[in-house]
Length: 104
Image (cartoon, rainbow, N blue to C red):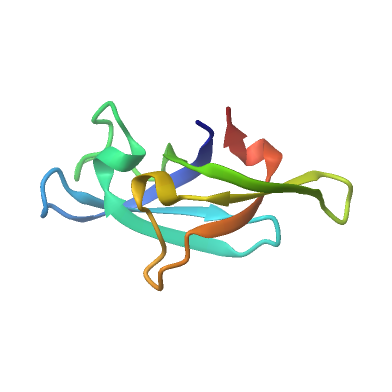
């Protein structure tokens, strides 16, 4: 399953266990998106803690929904972060990103 590269930028809260973090990424149009969810969703090895030095590179599982070509000829991919039910605070879970932002 592909993963979208993000940066954990801050520890939000200790509850619910194991804790909540905010991660951000910039989409293909330059818009910065913020996702807030359990730290285990973004970092499976326990590398995110309240004492971590942020930002920390992390990923979020995604599903490719479409592929296209951007204005400068780079490959653009529409992805959904639905595998782990991750979304923005307003419920957005579909984003257009550059292919280089994905780990396969």
